[in-house]
Amino acid sequence: MPLPAINLRNIFILAAVYIATLPGLTVGLRDVNVRIPSAVKRGDNALLICNYDIENDTLYTVKWYRGRREFYRYTPKENPAWKIFTKTNEIDVETTQSNASHVLLRNVPTSISGKFACEVSADAPTFDTSIVAADMEVVELPTQRPIITGIHSRYRLGDIVNGNCSSDYSKPAANLTWWINDIQVPPNYLRIYEIQRHLAEHLESAVLEINFVVTVHHFIKGRLKLKCSARIHDIYAQESEKLLEEDRPRILASGRSPDMNMYPFDQPGDVDEHNELFLTHKNAGSSAAGLRLALVNVNWNWKWKWNLMQGNQLLTFLLLALLWPAIWLCDWRHFGCTDWQWGRNLFWHSCCNADETER
Image (cartoon, rainbow, N blue to C red; front, side, top):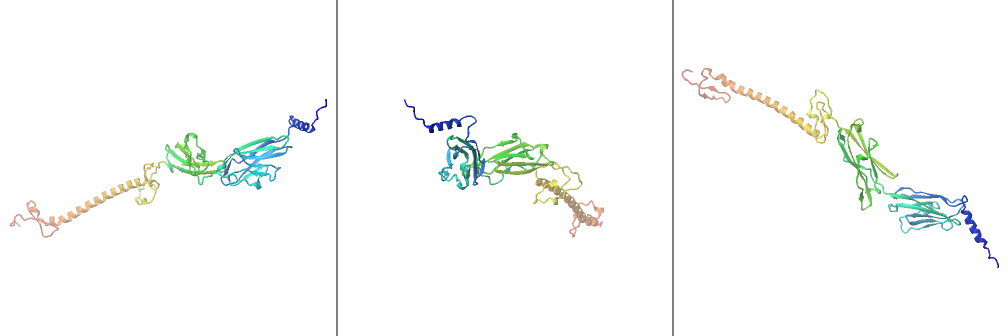
């Protein structure tokens, strides 16, 4: 019986596969990793890098995916080596700067944010394949700094500081942080509000509230620095500050009286900044205008009493001047008469003559 023919080609292939699978003798694809930016500003270019070690094997193909959809392929044995698989203009590949390890995306929109993956395949005989992925977010940055609202310029010990920090619309919303004298505030000082969304432009805004009681350790040389910072990944960082001053009573001894001409009503200013005679304690319900008005009333009351006293003295003098001629002309011996006769002079009068014969 004749022996079957031996196919030397098949034996060679089986031997090669067996040797390739032996421990310590394996060669081929390894160390596949990607360098994909975690965040890119909308409208910028994004460079995606796929690193790998093919060792003594031959590269078959490199494929790039956004989600599950392939958008770029590089096959060195084909001409041209690259192929683009985009049905829309969302992903724009710059082919002149793309190759077996690099892919350059131009003018990226926010709609392509998501997971990007690189798949590397070796050629025969191993046909090893490895795929690695990473997330990339295309960011719409805010157009202005965070805004601080509800914070006053002066506070007393024991007062409650309550205010909000709001970020401008962006995508995604900025991460907000409050700081007191450059120290991050504890979580119990904060209240996080729900993200506000701009439906028309698909943008978001964040609001973070701060609430705490002012104590003596908050003030450094009578001042407290309150700061709110906004960050988006590592491509955006802005902050806003408010400088708070300690509001405390001032006790100054002096003999000077307040000059009301120093406090015009049409100009701002606190009375206690000019007058050293009074104990002043300002709060939210008091105002410098009210204090000035009270001082003006006291001043006018004093002037009115002084003018009244001077008027009484003048009136007494006038009455004496009118009565003195009449007293001088009157006959005091008949002062007890019952009838008075007015003289021709309108400014004096004389006693009546009760007995014509005796005069």
